[in-house]
Length: 115
Image (cartoon, rainbow, N blue to C red; front, side):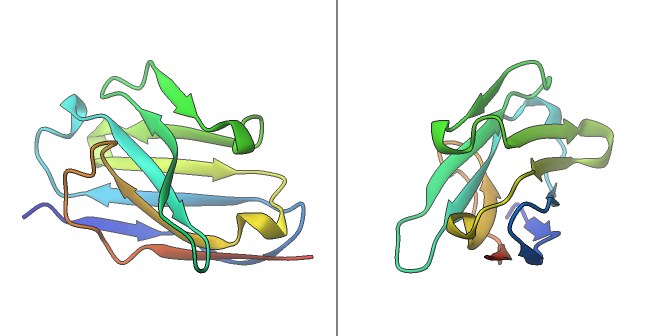
């Protein structure tokens, strides 16, 4: 069973930045498109960004475009989500997984943005 371990969340003020990390325990990591999801309180989990195995193609959801970026380090089996200019509406638990939700969910990392 592949393990997904997210970290990097926290409590920040509006306008600040955070970088989330997700370590993926799967040897063929460089072949796998990975994504970041967010789940605001009381809402569905949604994909906000994804990156292909080589790191050459990315998808950023419209509501966070220009503020969020995704990257990966295949040697470290880690995918990152850089979040800038955070807003209170970004408050959510963030998870990583494939766009097809292939793996069992990790514990997620809480991001709370105060106004």
